[in-house]
Image (cartoon, rainbow, N blue to C red; front, side, top):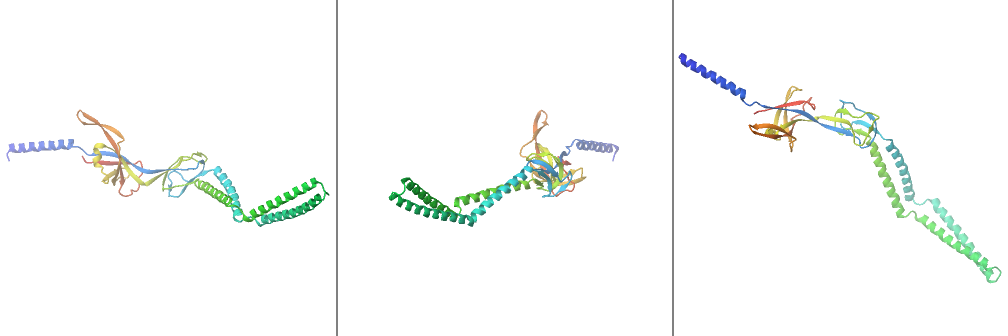
Length: 324
């Protein structure tokens, strides 16, 4: 090869190297997105207001579903239960008395009063016959005759009344009274059950397992109805959350698997796109071309790990590099 040809080849190689270097320098690089790990949180509150009696957990404790977290003191509910118990005993006594029929002593007493009224009526009848006969003969005054007649009529009415009372005693309670007593007992039982359920609700248990992230109130403080006292985080229900511009959404079809970098764990973890928000949250300005600028909406994208990742905690950063 001549010296001239060698110089030409060397020049071509230098030019090619320069072109490759320029292409490598100006080629579009991967788009790096940074998100963070989120986890399901639960706010544990009480539907019964009162004063916080005890808190059985502290921050960082791991609890299982069904574990008791705290207790509410409610003297008003306890007093209400005592009142309901008293009413319940009265209602039960009334039902037992009605269902058991009228007591034998009452039946016997009404029979005795009826028999007394019969004897009094017989005596009044005899007295009336004698006085009337004497009055007819003019031996007694008309006033005595009228008084004896009145006493006889009173004895008749007294006997009739005693007889009716005795029949009612034998028949027992009426259906209306029996139905009313049963309804009263049912209402009392329902109220008692309601108060007991409310008392059971003063002992608050975890409906899901997790880690206690915060305790918002301390024993002795007043707890309004529905106010959260304990916050739980379920690390097992965690996902990665990214805010993605709309021009990059095509890289996140639901079901696609992507590998995310988790710097805190020094690991690459496979995640699957599980949800893309239906509406954009906010707009990010970007120059799409010289003289043509417009806002790009930003959408939330959730990715869930293919398998549970040990040590993955909410707040950790996750990084995704998208190829150009």
